[in-house]
Image 1 (cartoon, one colour):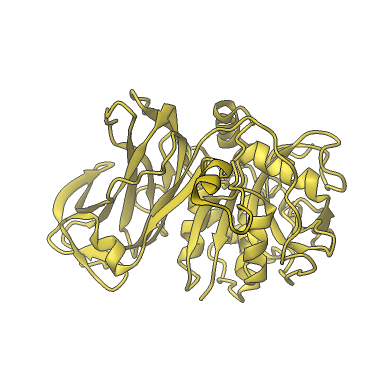
Image 2 (spheres, rainbow, N blue to C red; image 1 turned 120 degrees about the vertical axis):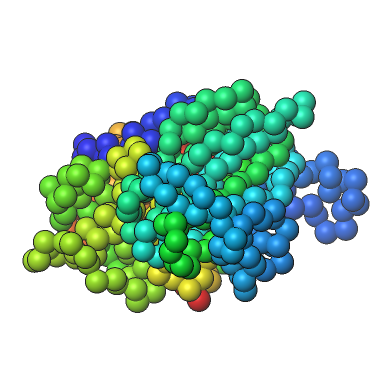
Length: 410
């Protein structure tokens, strides 16, 4: 089995918490003419909710300190002194309204879009309330910047309080919570005029569900396959082990690079040894590396990096099933998903098993089977695969609760 440990350290922590059984309930559509009472009885309680703030009107609902509103962003205005890692900054904060998912959430995965020129950065924090009305402390999820200096881009696993704790890119509740907030602090070196800004922030809240459910039926995506370029992570084996153990562990940045290439985006690699094939993969690994858990598989770091290059939205979410994912394929949006599987659980996979792996869903066969770009293919020519729909949906939902990166270009 190939070693995906650079990414998997965080996923194993998630798996211990989620017990490899994070299944998301799906709403049942009532028959035509059903009464409102019948509709209420037939629908399952939603177990996943994505909430985000990105438009002028949405961002204006948040509380601002030291910030000003712009068109679709907030930026520093009357910033206050702040010290981070011994460095002097000036900072402002944006705090979201309380988001109420309508169920007892057991985890939150925040994601964001920000502009961090030069030595500026953003800090992302979350807190929650439980059914008794108790409010937890603010927990720092990440310090993030595109340039990765002078404060290293990182997450902060731990910080256990009475309501939850941070596990790399996921905030895990001690029990369940009924509402949550996210707070983003924008920082730039004291005395500078760098235009650091926040364009989007939010989180997907979800709850554990143990009951198995049937495989989704093929929908409008059946028969549609997107011509997403293929990159193999394995051709980068041994490259830059300081970034999460090298190419054999780079399933996430390789997948992100493939989706960006689909949109015609291939940034010039910086600081990469000349002569590396598909050096954009090495570059992407460098740009998403998390110094906290020492890997390149941080979900939000991948989407935050992609957001600096695309003109549309880039975020982490969870989906109920492959039918929901099909809508993205129909819209021309390939989706990166997080799976895990043991021996004989994914027929045709280039590796026999994995504690956690990311790949790109690029379409569906006419019968609904899943067409993917699996970066674990030994060469670029071996990346494109077709997986059985039932097998694939099962290992996706069970391993990560249907976690997906959605990266859209405008």
